[in-house]
Length: 87
Image 1 (tube, rainbow, N blue to C red):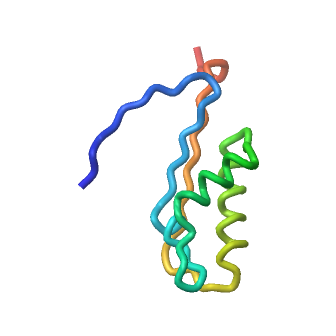
Image 2 (cartoon, rainbow, N blue to C red):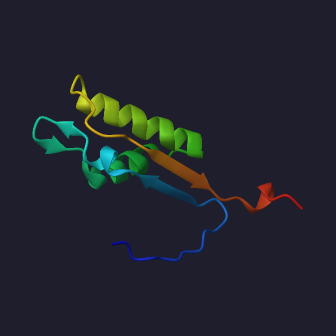
């Protein structure tokens, strides 16, 4: 069951969504977790949605190493810019 939420993006904001395959990526018995996502994004400060997706994809792959992927790893990043709206 999901609870709907509303938010307002400001110019330059980004919304990042990941599937549970990202947060539950395994390294032995340990899961990647949402804390590592926040840490990676905070430390690297990617500027575009493409950079966010590439960064998180590479971080998860590096962290899991040779462990087989047990679920899909979906990463969606949306950026908002008032300057890019069609008139």
